[in-house]
Image (cartoon, rainbow, N blue to C red; front, side):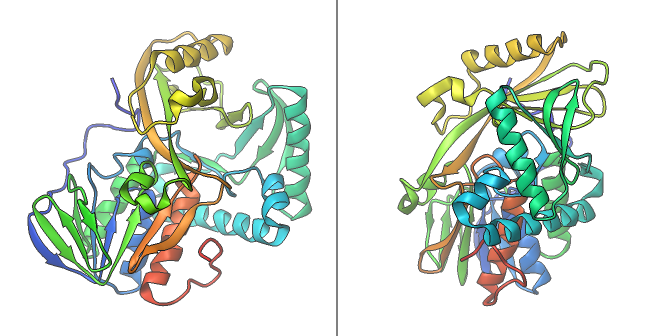
Length: 367
């Protein structure tokens, strides 16, 4: 059992690449960030080929918790302290606008219901209040919260979505707009002019590697700057409705949402796994899954487990995503530190403009 709850089994699949193609740009990775880049390049009138070693959104893009959170990987007050108020404010505003664009692009996959950050200790509650004050100081929506989930803060502008459904919709839209997309087509070698695959090649002007988990394996130049970790989740059978908003708890190490049909999608406990969770393997483990089950017990949720799954994601040392040219003509993006749904999509659009030879108006994340 390693299938995410998001997979309804209705994806018909795409062909693998056979033979040689020419394109202006080749995007390696058909997750949320890669597809966002492809869409932006299409809007700019460019010719694009997209490849993925597995299915569309077969990695973390289609196997995550389905949270749409504004801001960078670290909480807003931490981002202000570490990266400066101006950058943190502009990045937060840009991600708010990205969430709105995502809702417009795929309304059927997204629910903008807000999010809760819940404290598991007095220390964390004080940090929640610092988080709240920093958001309010810069004019962003947030309010203190106390309810059945606990105490913390409510961020009304956040939301949840079905990440796999969104990516599949984007892939279909890209195909209709003229992109050529191929599944089960790993990139064996990558240069700025050519991507070699098992049964063909893509000749191009530039390449974008849009991979989060295992990025340092695809591009060894990034080893030491980005590191792959495993995130694990499970889902229960439907229970009575208890959670109207997604919950981040215990500094974000535990997180869950209740789906519209009543199922609970719960993830986390990565910190409890220690060094073993710094791995590129995406199988679930008994140790972490048992901890997730105990958390369900603490929440007084008694329901059968229907899904268990894991995903590989990339973490950067400073919490900022990787966005740079690592070889002549080869750009890389990834290292979203567990929060790539919004930041990755925004970064994909910004890098598309760089590949186009310009700069996206209001760009924040690309140096």
